[in-house]
Image (cartoon, rainbow, N blue to C red; front, side, top):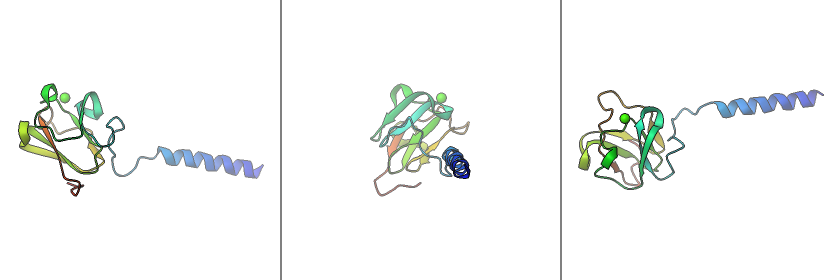
Length: 121
Ligand SMILES: [Ca+2]
């Protein structure tokens, strides 16, 4: 009987451990491995634009991005203007930004994906 109770407690503790978020914010699950993702809304919501190469223009997603995900194994820089102009927001490998600051919201227009040897911003 005691063994059964201990197993139940161990199971409950294991389930609780799974629910604890990790210290480093991983890229959101909807951003496929190997891709850099831009989301229309904050919190990784709305339309998603994902590419596995650098992009000089985001087309209809230009000036719309409100959150970012980077599921690549190296950093990605998201730029204010097309062709990597203006300021940039850098996101390290396997990381994300759930909401851009108000002065950078709905402004990103291109994204540059760093070399395989540059993983962190
Ligand atoms: Ca937006």
